[in-house]
Length: 382
Image 1 (tube, rainbow, N blue to C red):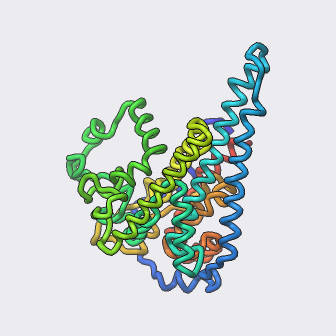
Image 2: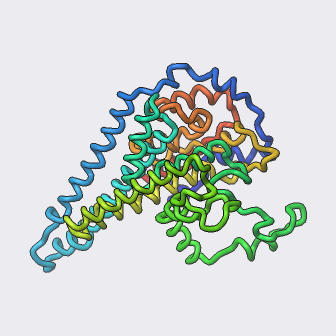
Image 3: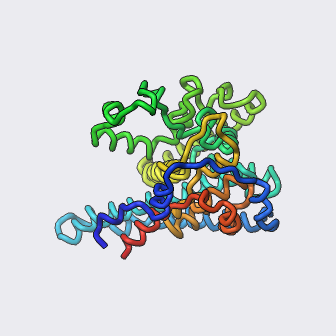
C-alpha cells in the first residue's frame, strides 16, 4: 500500500459522510439501560486497586530506566563514529522515547483521576476522592474544580450554549453571512491561515492547551467572562457550595509544586526537567489529543439548546481505538469506549468494552466509531 494511504479516512467515517442529510436521533435511554447487564454497573475496589498499582508500577519502572540513560550512554570522548552516534543519536532517542512513554503513563494517571471524578473506581465517594485527588494533583490538575466542569460537560455535551470546552465558533462569531447565502469566498479570508502559524498554534494547543484552559478558559465556553479560571473559587464555573473544594484543589497543587521544587533542589533542576516536566508536557499533548478527538469530527453535530437532549449529546461522541492496546492498557479505554462512558459515566472503565458491545445493536447507525488511527498504525507497522 502506498505511504500516502496511511492518512486516508477510515471506512466508518466515509460511511457516515455517504449517508447524506443528518437526522437527529430520538433514542430511549431506558432501552439502553436495560440492555446493559447489571453486573457491569458494579464497582470493585480490589479490581480498581489492581489497575491503579499496575499503572504506578510502570510509571516508576520508566522512571528507574530513565535514571540509567546517562550511564549506559556515557562515553569518554567524541572521537569515534560510534561515540558520536551514541552521543548525538542514541542518547537523544532514548530520552525522547522516555518522555513519550512516561507522558502516556502521566496521561493514564489523569485518566484514572477522571474515572475517580465520576465515582467509577469505588462505590465509596471518599475512596474515589482520595485516589482522584492524588493522581490528578500529581499531574497538576485541580481535581475538584475540573470535576465540577467536567460533570457539566457530561450534562451538556455538544450543546453550543452550555458545553464547557471545544465549543466551535459560529458564523456570527466570524461575522459571516447566513449559511443560505454564504459562498466559498466568504470563508476563505477568515479561515485560511499560513502553514507556519497553523503549526505554531497546533504546538501551543497540544502541549499547553489544557493548562491554558484551566488557567483562563482557553478554548472553553465563550459565554464565560474573560479571565475565567479553574483556580479562582469565585469563578462563574462554580457554585458557592463548590468554593471550599476549589480551595482544597489549589492547596493540593501548591503542595505538589513544593515537592517538585524540593526534588529539583535535591537532584538538580535538569533532573526535574527531564524526569518530570518534559513527560508532563507530553502527557498534555496526549490529553488534548484524545479529548479533542472524542467529540470533534466533521460528521458529528453540535446542538442549540432547543434541539439538544442528553441522548443526542451522548451520541455526539466518537469511539476511536487510539494507540491500540496502548490506549486500552495505559489510557484505560478512555477513547475506545467513550460513547458508552457518556451514557453510563459511573460504570468502571474496565467494564466499558462489554457495555459498548451491549448497546451497539440499539444505537445502530448512530453509534460513531472511527478506525482511522488504528488503520494508520497497522499500515505503518506493515
